[in-house]
Image (cartoon, rainbow, N blue to C red):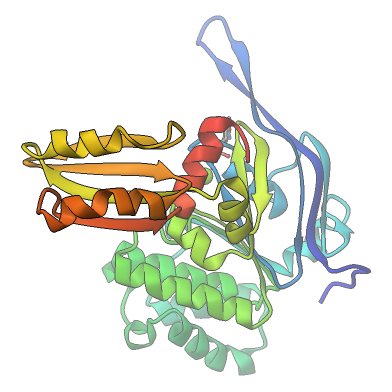
Length: 331
Ligand SMILES: Nc1ncnc2c1ncn2[C@@H]1O[C@H](COP(=O)(O)OP(=O)(O)OP(=O)(O)O)[C@@H](O)[C@H]1O
Ligand SMILES: [Mg+2]
């Protein structure tokens, strides 16, 4: 392990990345994109940290800078206490990264041949290679497919093999950019279990995702980035409770009975927010409220007289919180 005086695996300070791209054929003009605009955060050793944010927010650019693939325009990055620009080669030995998809695998080779090739490239001791490959194929759920050519794999299987490739040299810090994108629900669940297993082995993991339930399930802490800046950062549970104590009361009714529901909802306190969505003959009514118990009591008689079909309460999800943070520009 890299020697470090503190518990930080990653530490960034005022990190900036501006891209300059040339446009036009005759009159070449340069356009600047400020992809990352001064972000400061840290990830502790052993932590599973998430980066969330809309398309183009600057997540991949950040991950590429942290994993030595892009040089920052300004600001600093320390990995295990070492400056990334001064110790790039050393740091690379201790990190692994995947950027979605299955780049860098050879379709004509089998999974085992691919992993053997990369094990040689990483100069893994040949005696360890055999067991390591077996362990990793087991870990990513491909043990039975090790002798099949990679070109016969589905894209989800290729993605899992790619993760095995990344783990060959047993990196302490792993960057996963949208690891479950394009993977079916069962495969994604398996991959999330693998990610948890890696965390339990003491790895530090930074991942990006657009799946809020995934971020909620996996991350110890997360940062929400928008337009290249961090606009919220905390644990998923703190973000959910800090932001608001609102809950949602949800009901379904028919168009015919909707006016009766509206009559009752007219008695709600003005802070409550009601939204209506129609799906064929069914109306879904969603009431955001601080007093779900009171709202339920108001609506319960409608349920017993069959004027509504279903009635229930749900707490805020990570997705509700995320949408609210993005819409309001911060937590
Ligand atoms: N190589 C590049 N040259 C020019 N601009 C770039 C380059 N890479 C990224 N950008 C721009 O930087 C901004 C941030 O892109 P980035 O890929 O970091 O976003 P992201 O948060 O990962 O988005 P997504 O969720 O879609 O993956 C975007 O405006 C993008 O167009
Ligand atoms: Mg991205």
